[in-house]
Length: 477
Image 1 (cartoon, rainbow, N blue to C red):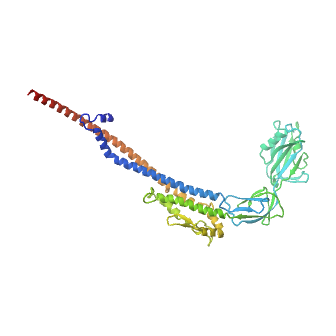
Image 2 (cartoon, rainbow, N blue to C red):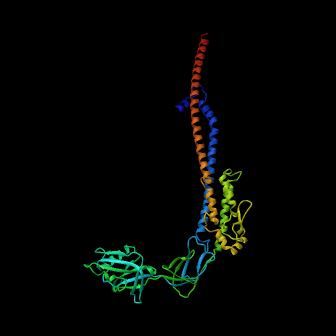
Image 3 (cartoon, rainbow, N blue to C red):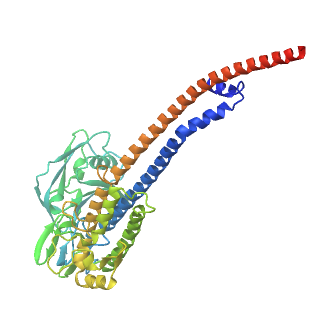
């Protein structure tokens, strides 16, 4: 309706009323709309800046944590003879100064039993129940079990019926119990044999006792134990025997995690009388590179922070979270990173050669750093350990604390982001209200000028009538 009236305006008065109304509305609202649009653009720029800094500090902290947890910056265990024992680091281990002697006298073994040969592995052996019992055993040189003592573990019964009475079915039934004994079938020219293997350790020896079904005897041929004649113990169960710094110890497996703190031992071969030295090597070169890389990444992030806070061109000059981030980063070189350090050892980045320049960036005094890596490499290693947020140990924990505060949605950059988004919502709402007000004003002026235009048209019509009448009078005279 308003558009139709606007298009018709001026036909009576001859005045471009439509342009006049648009000019009046623009004069009233254009400045406000421009102001709100500019504010929204500014707020979007701030949000972009805040997001960039959030991503930057979080990425910095995560990358340093990943580097520290990856193990390349921590001492690694070493073995003087990896053919006898291999070593690896357990999570969270601190191995600097490790020096342990170890002798492997005996490897842990699992009991292995093989049955006599059967002509057909798919033919029925017998039916009844096979019972597995675990404990310790003695075995003679010929593979006969000469003694057995049951342990605390419960016996396991395995039902053998028409569905699994063959050698193949018996092997599958034993495996299905997941009792700690695995069964397999091995065939050669003499026939098929059932092979049973337990777990390593002297207490993982086992017997297999048949309770036969009288209608289908034959399972006793698979008996394992004292007096059994149908099977042979090819390998007896035994513990690993090791001597650590002169102390003799037993373990049930060859993968040992509780003899040397922070070190996993994988026993590869027994060599009585041979001493293997377990030590540690400091990652000096990796630590040096880590310091250099840390400074480079820090400078890149600080340059971004400084740019956003630039008094003339920055988009976050008044953002308190960004200012707080800059202050936290600037203090990082003097933060104590080794809470259990001793006097005379470095505990801050500044003390290992990382200095702050006048523009807020960092630089590395390589002479000082190399000296510290020579004389206090273990302490520098502690500075780059994963650490714990609760104690603040290590540079990764210190940087993580900064990142957590900086990205907080309550008082950090996250809070700034929420504030700016809220302000955009307010400005957008104000724009919508202004647009509605402009529409109302346009409608009101349109109605007013339409009335005026009608009156002017009437006046012009009267004027035309009078002019015509006067011309007629003059013509008559």
